[in-house]
Length: 56
Image (cartoon, rainbow, N blue to C red):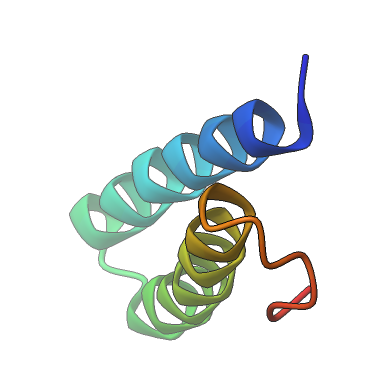
């Protein structure tokens, strides 16, 4: 599995975890997971562009 694929899988896992935290009424957890998701999505974009010095 490539780095990009692993990052996409991580983004999916974070998204699911944030949604579950939202349903459970855990706003601080939702916020933290959302911030992590932003970082991972930026890393995915950087990987797809061939620019590996993104927010990792």
